[in-house]
Amino acid sequence: MTSGGPGEDTALIAYRITTEAFTNLNVGYASALAMLLFVVMAIFSWLNIRVMNKFDS
Image (cartoon, rainbow, N blue to C red; front, side, top):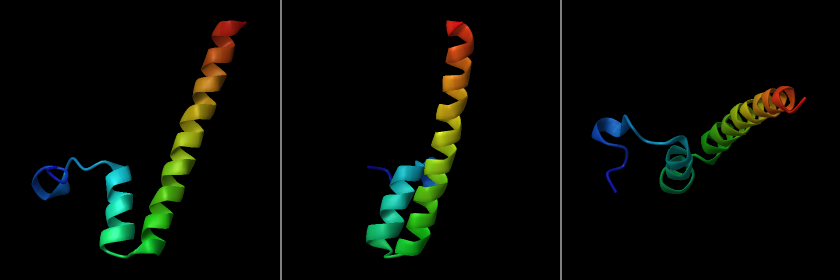
């Protein structure tokens, strides 16, 4: 695995969370990143449900 290309420019957030938690042992920072990811995904899911309900009507 390339670890996100040169300088981790293309690393995914899930890879960053895992690296921070288990390699760097920054569990608090990894937890904050995971919560941020959860909030962003919840917002996108809510928007998707709203848009799909408009098309359903």
